[in-house]
Image 1 (spheres, one colour):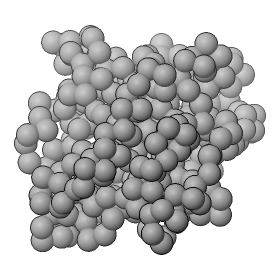
Image 2 (cartoon, rainbow, N blue to C red):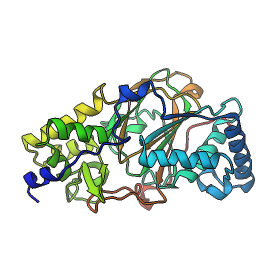
Image 3 (cartoon, rainbow, N blue to C red):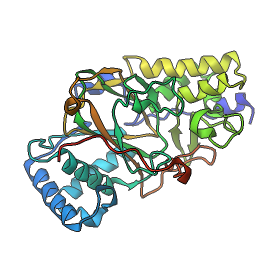
Length: 347
């Protein structure tokens, strides 16, 4: 379809997913604080999970029964799918549950929200986000292994969860933005650029792991539509890497990508929050993008920033266009070897 014809077919997304940060910052209807009854239900589920003898990453809904909080969690899942598209769970008492117990709880709650998928070539279902002393300049380094900022992006899964064990000494703020709101703003202000985002870009990095030139064989749309549902996939660093590897980019394509980046960073759109110990954040990758600021850590190893990450697929599949791109996690590669040992956690 010619780009001018594609332009005429685009419509606003609207609805609760098309929010703006300042407007919802005060409302805080995206934050759920666990009640005493919720915590007791979770504690009982933790006892069942521990009695099963299974590792945290092998726990399913049967090993983490939630006869009371489960109904609330189902409502929160509905909001992740058809509402704001993100959620912050607060109030898990860190003086009651150790870090390892919190990981079991995190994975158990995740089992009620979806199905865990691999986050890396090692096949890890629970990933640890901390400064490993690496930089973006090093080969085979992903942003979460550094203390540098992570620009707004989506992940290769339906739902991404983040559990905070320890916050940084300074920085490390978490940010979320509505890609639905950005879509509608571009449609309103620069409709000539929106078809380029629907056509998409070639990707470098892991999208092209099996490509001789390190670039994806086809374009991957930033926005795509199926059954009236618009979904977003946005990893600007991978797009720019493909350009560095020789993929030509027209001035209009550069402008479209820069406009997308501009709106993700703009204070009129983004929502910033500080995750505290015990907090759990969940984001729908199709209607939001997320980021993290750079951080400075404590010198003591036991106090350093530590997050635990979970990638989930919805059990009720999200309607995705055939050209959307990979979204079922990162395939396990035996040649990658065993996963690195996790950092020390409290027992």
